[in-house]
Image (tube, helix red, strand yellow):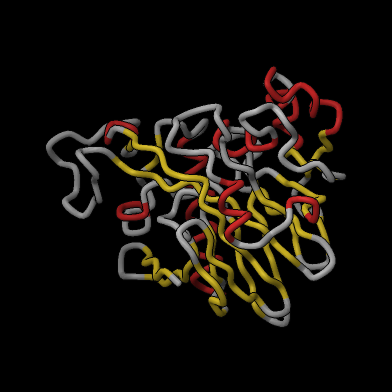
Length: 269
């Protein structure tokens, strides 16, 4: 996997014959109390020293990923537009910097339906972010959640169900990774023997959750299931030399996974 271009808001890689671009929507700062040890216990004075903080808070990058197979661009997640914190909503700038024309994006698939992944469908001024959108894929268990978002009402009837094992194209396959949300989904991107897992919110705090994957996140719908999915995909990536791309890994959020004696290690690319 080779990095071929980069800027403040984007980084593009070659995965076989495919171009995958990490798009930085921005960041969000969260209190350390969002971290959860087994038993839904928070950290206090025992917060590990390795946890990276900015002014006492956990800074989470917010990334989306564009997959260009030469014929069509599939966008995985869309960022938050102006639906949440003002430190996000930079996806249009990232696309422009990466020289990706929004008219080429005809398929969008969501890892899940939390607001920092779906609201980029609509620009802050109310216009459609992707005017040539032909296919909008939402994990089937979360269709009702998506259709409850009033701001996205014009897209409610356009949403199609996304199921585990479904192929979005010859090179993109959906993998069920529930826990963070009921329909949370990863995407396996494969070309010429190279594989990238675009894994959504499996890891929120990279300075801790690779080394200690048992640590969960307050917003995990089912913490035990989220732990199991995280361990499953970390092992899959490490044991098969897959690269990974995460929505909340430090931008650009792409790298390799290896095993350690007690957990895993992430090497940014």
